[in-house]
Image 1 (cartoon, rainbow, N blue to C red):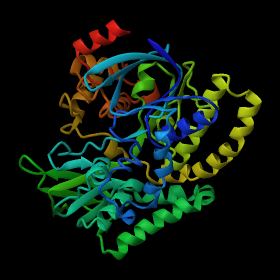
Image 2: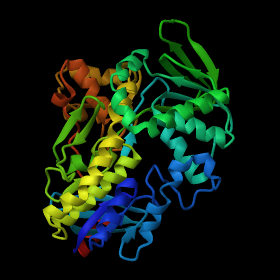
Image 3: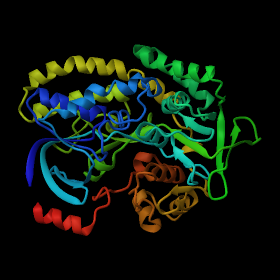
Image 4: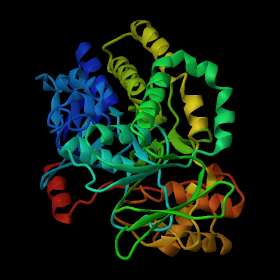
Length: 462
């Protein structure tokens, strides 16, 4: 088994910045990503997108060019289209490229696996034609694909507004934006505005997106308190209620894109048994990290949104810090030198993330969007409803692992990625206990599907 000094998992802003920083300090990293091209979700398909009109995706997207091009450095062992199916506490990493599995070892690992969209389990969310906003953006960036008929976007958060504007610029017709942000969130967020003003550029971008949608005449329906996707075998219509009204309104559409913000992707840190904290402000689990973004598992660090949602610019800064931390751990820098180099990065990071409390409060998803009704699916893979999870609580299940044993919830192809946080919150609510007390699924490798033959070959060569 070959041992490398540094292995970085992920090529989003954090992973790319970590690789560049490592190179500056004499470290030749192995950089792994399961996508065929670099960029993560933020800079996805940047080098091969068919959308060459820079205005469509915006300058924030194209600002990643320099980072992505950095992977061409011959000192970087860049491995695209490679799946990580295992990571142990001893930093042994199982890889799968095409049909070939192998094992490598690292002296230091930086996880830059980013975020995933928070599930939004509404009635009808499994109908063909209903997707997440992130999925819609992936199709736009990688294939230039836009909905052929008027699309409805529903939920809350900056991505929803950004995607709507990108669709408009690409020539797509938007039927409506159904905004689920509760009105009281605006009042609650005001007290965090002074901190947010330290990052006025991000605030102005949000205002600019809203203005562009308003000028284009896009219907922006606020105060949506209930939502349903309906159709016979596929999506045909969207129905909703607004706060204070019992009337249902309807729009005919073949495409509904849902979004309730993003949460850290903690599948790997969970499987490695790193200590995790429930972040009540972001309503998500995140690994506990030290000043160099290292977990309580020696030699394993997390940079970017996988350690708590910070945004693309801040993720790149964290990648720099994690790269300095790797140089320190590998003896390429002294503590004094690394601390000195990190100081301006930490100051810039503090300014960039000063807006987070404002955004976290403003776009904090309301309870009805996180806890599905009894008849609504919570686990798509095993078709387990919210009602079944509540019945498990009535039977005495206090946590997700007991519930998994009875219902297979979390045992499907996604391995709990889509339902994990929903099940934890459902059980916590039903048992009247905190989410931290309730816990999360106990995860084990393989993280992604791998055949017995591929495993055997990896064992032979390992």
